[in-house]
Amino acid sequence: MEEKGISQAVISRLPRYFRYLGELKDEGVERISSQDLSELMKVTASQIRQDFNNFGGFGQQGYGYNVEYLYEEIGKILGLDKEHHLIIIGSGNLGQALANYMNFERRGFIIKGLFDTNTNLYNKEIRGIKVQPMEDIKDFVKENDIDIAVLTIPKSSAVGVAEQLVEYGIKAIWNFAHVDLNVPKGVLVENVHLSDSLMKLSYNLNCYELGEE
Amino acid sequence: MEEKGISQAVISRLPRYFRYLGELKDEGVERISSQDLSELMKVTASQIRQDFNNFGGFGQQGYGYNVEYLYEEIGKILGLDKEHHLIIIGSGNLGQALANYMNFERRGFIIKGLFDTNTNLYNKEIRGIKVQPMEDIKDFVKENDIDIAVLTIPKSSAVGVAEQLVEYGIKAIWNFAHVDLNVPKGVLVENVHLSDSLMKLSYNLNCYELGEE
DNA sequence: TAGATTGTTAATCGATTAACAATC
DNA sequence: TAGATTGTTAATCGATTAACAATC
Image 1 (cartoon, rainbow over the protein chains, first blue to last red):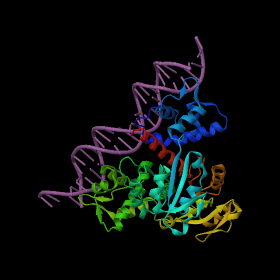
Image 2: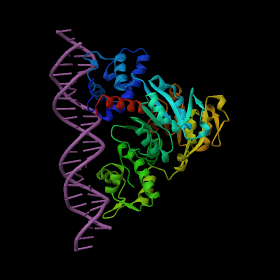
Image 3: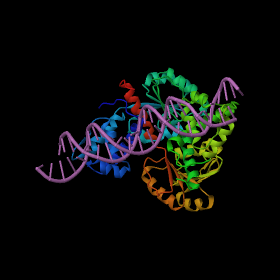
Image 4: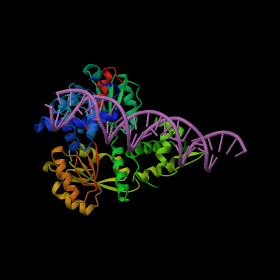
């Protein structure tokens, strides 16, 4: 499983492959050719083969790909065979929504702690986890082997909190705050900028209405 | 403002430009060169000029770009000068989180209705809007000039509901369900696949730990 | 006018697609 | 063996970057 300089374009497509293969597996499909998968997913067979070959040969000439094997391998590439420990910082609506989303846990993303500045939320339980004050993050991270911090706080405090998290040794931030975090090399940030996504939709809606493609 | 065949790569960058320009405007900055903006945003000045020139000449040689003017123009390109009427389908945690997010409204995205299958939620009010049963969507869309439907329901029902929405005349779907919707040409879908995003983070975390870039 | 900086063309780079030899 | 389909190289396409003439 050589993984050298894989482009983010390829990485971005892996979860979608994983999803389709999971569905095929559940349907009891044993094998699939790049051609058939390409028709299902509406991408080129060439791209599928190129993508998979970044990670070594998963297929077999004349046969295609074994669905279950490929599903497992992509899961491993995505790190879904490992447990990840998350804390959610900002336990408002969005933080709670994420905490309640069971499917993350199914994939090994375990939510260990919830934090907020709002004293009214303290000790509120979400799926058995009590909301704690922000001051407790430092010790909690140390004691609970936390991989990933989820930032669901307003943009005004996000940059500062992110800096602190880096100090505490957090290596990955899933950032829902609408601001670019400035973290040192070696710390990962994955942004989910919801309003950017909505604006894109608005743009396309707009230019479509003007009769353009 | 000619907008012919602008690539999605460019569109995806517009909201970020808009955000930075808004901040500059709030700080009272009057003008900025592509060079200065490039240092701020960590992209090339070339890309900035190319991007803006897709929509016509917003700058002035020897001067740069007027921040407020550019901000306004990009806003218009993104359709933020128009009002958009949204309904949220699925009033669970995520739907409520989105309904409560004030900033969308500030940009002209007005949430008009909330829907759910769960009878326990009926008449629950979120920011003054009562949750209604799914059966009421059809008439509501007709009577309230709805542009965009936000899908925050489980994947199992998302495909079916999307089909109905298309029948009711919805032209844009902001899809949070973890499934690809199959809609006819002319209907827009913007996907927010949260678990895909989390998996990407997991991949990068994983390959970083293995000592790779 | 001289300096600055855009708008735009040309060069480069990377990603996607096509083609086909290798091989199951 | 013949047919199917991958793995992989080569060709194409598109996006990014560099360069510079136009012009404020």
